Length: 126
Image (cartoon, rainbow, N blue to C red; front, side, top):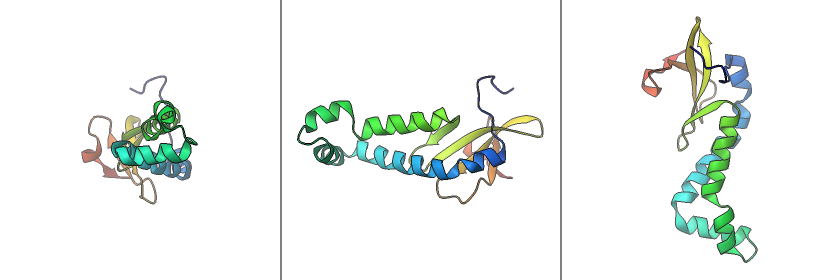
């Protein structure tokens, strides 16, 4: 059963989001990587904070950027499964059954789906 608050996508609606998702997920992957590398985080703040790197580290930075970008994707009703690979799911319905349309950053189109209870390993071509 589909949750009443869940955003359910058609294939066409999900496809229309791909350009925006490509931007968001590319930025999310970069922020995620930078948050793991402390030197990259310091360099980011030193450049962006106009001399107040320590204050900027507390208020913003790659970790907070990653959180913000994840929230932005999720606000669209898209489920982020793996920020590193840009793997996302769109809640959808196929033959009357709730499923996920599955897409990964770098794929040209949404060409896969999987049952709600299987995940990536259950991906099947549309």
